[in-house]
Length: 222
Image (cartoon, rainbow, N blue to C red; front, top):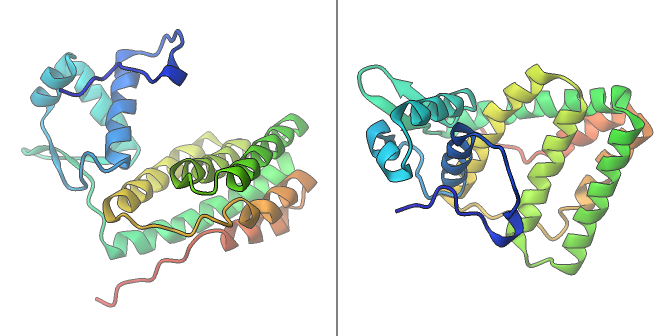
């Protein structure tokens, strides 16, 4: 049986996180890490028993994952993890380019000095990780995603953050499913111009660098 509330040593701290939020985090993590497969059916009653939660709590958690683009609810057949084909990937790529480039420009223009300082500090940690632990591809990948999410948050638009989750999470799930490995040896330095442009308030360059940092996905022929 999966343990829903068993934290790692580094996560041992008092929290007021609701049962619903914990269930969302648990299910999201298991989807993104590939333990729950794309297209897999999710049975509300079985999840409630497995996680020792009420069905209403599980239902609310699944609804939250619908809003994040990771789960769909099919009429008369219940819940299912989203499936992603090449056409979906092509669309997600272009949506990501549009959102991230605009968010980078907005962050360069409007983010506070404190937010830009936090971004610079985070980027230094990112660089240090790549330099000292270049083989820790999982952590490097996590910091890569975190950097992009931080820029989205810095733009100050809650609507954009909400839309971005619907792109980001399905992409992460797809990568976990296909076991696609990207060369992360130059991960931090490839973002340096983007971070510098945002911190300098150069919106045009920030947008250009955001577009350049996203791996292109080709559209299927059919």
